[in-house]
Length: 194
Image (cartoon, rainbow, N blue to C red; front, side, top):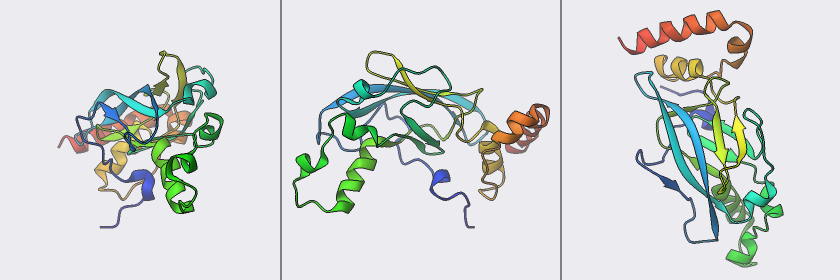
């Protein structure tokens, strides 16, 4: 069966018990950030996670403090994890050419930029909506990013129940028809639990 939703809905490659995520260990100095999020398990149950992400040193200085629900340095939340804004790397003084040398191809440099800012997270199907915010804290514990606009709980349940045929975030239904949203969540949970 062909799965829909493209890379936004691919499964995470993070080990289920990962506590620290660094896609390029030892390549550059890092800061330990903390991401707190919710993930939907295969049976539809929710589980809360907290994982350390190692972002390039200097990132905290260029990412402003935010309130819950404001994106800040969070670019996007996907089923597999999250991406932070690669555009902040230059402001933070991150220089992959200095690390890898001037002969490094553009393709390799782009891979380094994305590996430094996009992280697969453990735990199943990562979601982010106003009921289940993703929160990203800098090394001092200051909220520097959050998301309420990833795939909703209903979106994850619909994807799991349909075997990947339904790939939608269902954020509009959650906002405009909350009662229908809650009823759909209950129905899909019944389907998943047999």
